[in-house]
Length: 198
Image (cartoon, rainbow, N blue to C red; front, side):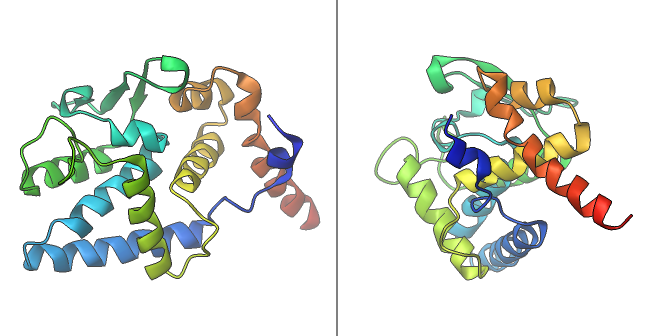
């Protein structure tokens, strides 16, 4: 893990930026449904999934319907081939579950993959990255952000709410707890703001 990454927060979206991205996607999805269009509805689900689970782009790309527990009381998914080919279970919110269910019901392609592609079985990591960039630009976000920025936002938000490094490490699938401590640096920024107000 490089010290440069430890010190850099340029890839972390602010709460206002995340809100702008979500609002842009929500508005586009509503319009798309009135025109029976698939793209914006799918893209909203992709980005909300990234923000609500912290999955890596490759994990989103290869996610199958059978990997997601959407039964009553079931709010989790299994990552079968995470980094280092490791498996993990990731919990998510009821709100995200509702969005995923609505997307599955709306989509017009019957596929075992959550995000099927026209050209192959599932959307590639590159296609997902392009979709993110498109909506980030529409939302007025800086070009430096990528789909991976959603993972950083998720990690920071989860750590902020839970104050539990081990829980955050498990959700993200980090082998080394040192990787997760990077996100604790953001909480240090809050401490600086707090002491300035004393």
